[in-house]
Length: 471
Image (cartoon, rainbow, N blue to C red; front, side):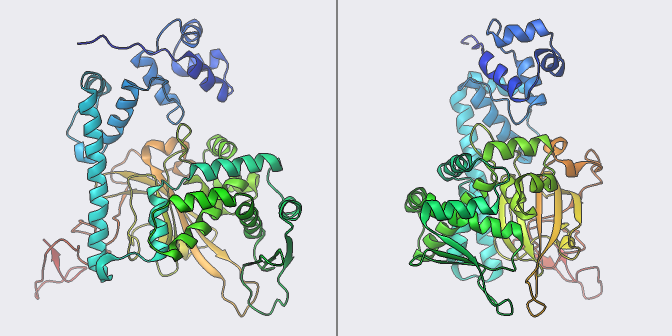
């Protein structure tokens, strides 16, 4: 057996300590090391041992990324794959995984690739099952579904656009970026004037851009955070037009409408990245344990915008917590969704009725939390809040919906909304599913439809909550 490679990562370790504003004594105490030993590690006088690497991963789970691109990379991906409940009966100790990754790196890589292919096939099977169960002919995708799935496949993060927006934010050099500065940039950089809509008794588009006249008209009734977002949207649409066009050109979309929708979606992504620049937003989110109200105050954005931005923090080498995010309307339709976790949303129809997001729609401006468990045994901490967007007139109904944000329980310590939940209790978790048609649970009192892939039995002389038994 070839000798185990020793890992020297002094500069990475020192950069990690400085990024968290820790002195050597504080860092050593956090890792359970002596100051002299830590100094030797930072100066590459000693290698990073597996025990030290484990301590770093425990203390800095989102930041510790060993500079070794070989065995450590294989080990990280192998550990992520084997965390799937599908392999619950397999040994997951670090020593066993290290041995597999180091002795058989090719086999470890193929195992990871096979698992990724399995997850993709499962997602495709769920999509097909939903299409059959929902009656959608052929499971064909509408233009907005094409774009939604494109963002999902991209991990809800578009690196060239995100980085270009961050550079643009550095140019503006303000936090939060005020409306006046965005209006000034539109005028001086692109010759665009901004005006508010006129007659308040008449419904107006939220945003209208007249390219020939260089005139941007915004509905005067919209909330300030929405107005700021539309100003940012227009600025990045013009300032980053070439970058957006290149990404759109490389996207494999079928219809012209889908490509135009993608342009809008990319501009929205860029607007969020302009108002909430990646590095500063990620650091602020971690410092306040992802307290969304505090993030809204610092960056001058809405609750929904901050939640959405948290779900996009997937930059390689500087990832945020893997979150799922969705928006649900009064009818239970999922109108916006993304998941960086193992939780996947229903492609057709609504979400599980046991999920707290449905209750949040009916209770605006109150944050609800929930510990939930999916049929595969993975548990999540969910936060949901009902929101109301005013219309500006009694004659126009306000928009009512709820947003939800959540993560797997292994990140609960960094998610302020998990405080007070009994994470360790198995009985405390609410059993949820993707949707009734895809959920295998046979004892759910809230089931609306039987599973699409299971037979049922009906006993005329027996009635329980639902009039059948799932076989």
